Amino acid sequence: MADIGKDIERPLGQTLRAQRSAARGISTGTLVTTIAVLAVMGVSAAIALRDRPFRKPQEIAVSTPKEAVAPAPAPPAPAPPPAPAEVAATSPNAGTSMKSGGPQIIHVQPAEGDGAPKAGIVIRDPSTLGQDLKVAHIPDRALIEASDTGPLPIRAADGRRPFDVYARPWSGARGARVAIVIGGLAVSQTGTQAAIAKLPAEVTLAFAPQGNSIGRWMQAARQGGHEIVMQIPLEPFDYPNVNPGRNTLTVTASPAENLKSLHWALSRTTNYTGIMNYMGARFSADAAAMGPFIAELGKRGLAYVDDGSSARSLASDLALKDGVPFVAGDMSIDAVQERGEILKKLDSLEATARAKGTAVGIGSAFDVTVDAVTSWIAEAKKRGIEIVPISAVAIDPQKG
Image (tube, rainbow, N blue to C red; front, side, top):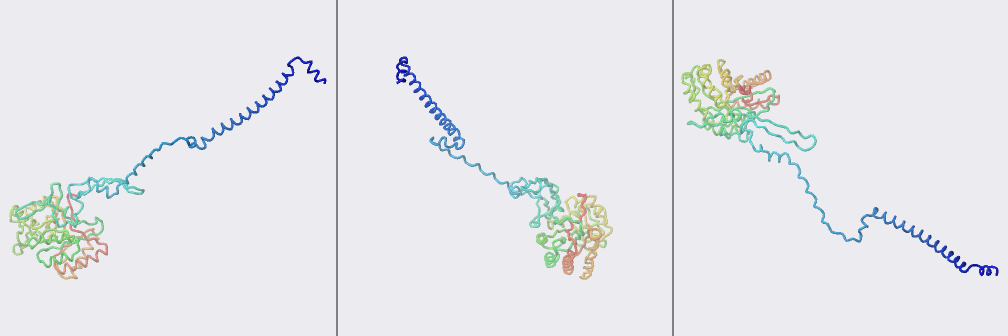
């Protein structure tokens, strides 16, 4: 009742304001709570929206249609470097014979890979290489001069000599070397055939100009790997009682007459490196006769092989003067035509080669000589003797 009285005594509207304050307090608390809840939800949403694109960026545009883009074509793989054979085939020098022209400079490209040889320059001089044996029987047209009697050997316009081009290749080693020349081929058909067939290819063969079918035998010999020379009949001291044969060069003939006889002999065949005397002790000792003869050999790029039968020969000095490659024989191997004696001569030839590096033996195409030489060479090779062509032991003034 007291409370009721107090309520009556209060000014009008006082109680109502108290109720409104209470109501306002409730609303404020509720509002604060609501705001707090909303704030927590907003922060959570912000965090969620902020993290998701970094975790899965592709989900941002999940609902956006994607434009199809064609993938770019892969670049073509680089072509592999050409193999050495391909480089050689496309090189400006490919297919050029080493026999054509003077010295050639060949640029060598480096190969790929570790340990491959480095690039370099190789200088090749055709005068240091013999003709390919596969085509050795085919004359080089650049080395031929036409004449009334037949083809004559001549220096090529680029300076190459028959001595260089028709030489048989050899190892170039410094060991003991023996050169053997077997002469008289083309005189006997059966003997010539046997000599070409039986003798090792390293043996040099000498053809007699008076023989028959020399062109055919030359081809057979060259295809068999032999180097060849032409024998030229020169006047001996007891001429004409001892006659070397048709068109012998003599001391009484004029230089023109002797050159005509020389040209006849030279034109009998082709593809030889030089000439060898047949007899000629008197002719080779006469400077007036021998001088023009040796000079003509120099002009034509031929070597001179002295069989060593005359100690009075002037060939060595004249050859040096006229730039003619020169070879002197050390001994005749078959002056006595008996197998045992020939083998003794060959053994002596080997001893000479071991002593001074080279030795030259001269023989003829007798059956006994051919058989003895063939068997001896087979054994000599086992002892380390190299059998070389006559050009391999020549003293060449043009090469120092």
